[in-house]
Length: 140
Image: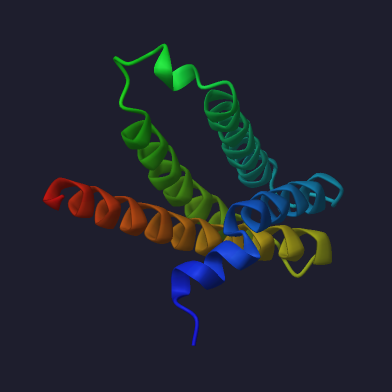
């Protein structure tokens, strides 16, 4: 059997996480809203998550982390995912409670929950591998 980290890499959890965020946003955006504050909060959280993910991709692609050494980039990325996951879970719970069985709103909340689960898996797999790699490097 394959280890969990290999399975997660095969399915590329980050990509699926982003797609589920985007689908959740589009589902809520194109539905009739029952509660403006609940769904505007859901949209803000999903868009902020997507923008921050794009920001960290740009940092890694252009290797900006080499220029800004005063920032602990792994810690910043970990905190982003942790806070984003908590906010997304709250937004999904609020969206689900205010959906009143409207299909688009239920779909948005469902994809929000899916994105929350995928983000937790992503955090767990990324930082478990990171901690194991660091401890192995220290022993050498």
